[in-house]
Image (cartoon, rainbow, N blue to C red; front, side, top):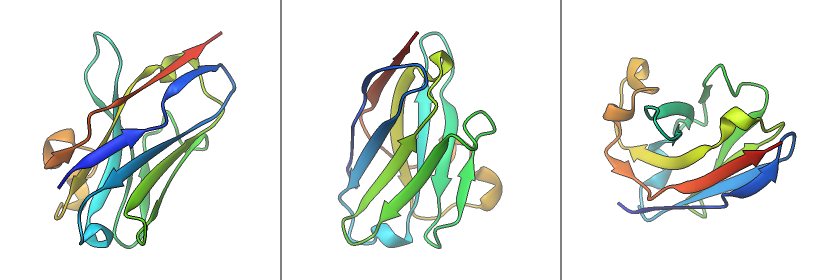
Length: 124
């Protein structure tokens, strides 16, 4: 399974960006896919996840500002980011796993497949 993240860039605070993650997996619709991010000097942290049933999960820090979605036909996941803040600056990674228990959805160690990351920089 290969994941390809794209869509990062530089944006001013308050702006928007949409990240895209293309997944090369025929059973994509049955995977749980997620976005994590890592800022310099910090640990990788959970951002959002979406289940095969389209149920979604968000970190408290992005709830109401970010929206995760997917297109099963295109085998693609999206992260629409709005009202961006300086603290959203990080490298964003997409991840996927075929099976996961609900209590581990926010746990990076639970995901088997990772994309290469895309940089998001928010400036004032």
